Image (cartoon, rainbow, N blue to C red; front, side, top):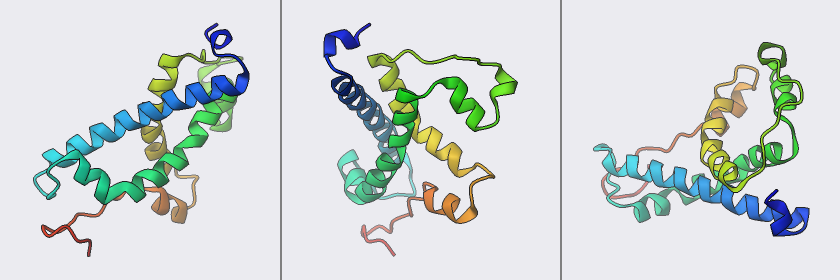
Amino acid sequence: MWLTVVGTHLEGDIALYLLFFAGQLLYILKRSAAAIRNPDTPIKNRRQYVYHNWDILLIRTAFEFPVFYLWRHESVSFLLNLLNLGNVFGTSGMGFYSSPITALVVGYAASDVLNWITNWTRLPQFLRDWLAEEIPAMPVNGHRP
């Protein structure tokens, strides 16, 4: 197991979180590329995208941390039972192996998980509205309305 190379459990968590964060950064890179190619926004490069959306990106990164925590410390069967899907998939004791590649992939997918949670009908509407990724369109001069 690769954690024996890292050392303690805490050091392993930190190393995996850094890879999880790298996955989140890859997702931000993808989002910024989409914003650059969008003809309705005046954003011309990735630096502008991060400059104009740093607060939203930071909030979303903080809200995606529980995805890392659950992935790292809970089994898949627990998570599916939490969503009342355990009987559907029949995943008794199933879990993900904690590896650097998995941490990167889970970090990349964390934004999609957050987007899925915002569409979850059991979540109160005010939380769904608050968590939803709504980056407002900016006028040509770069100032928000």
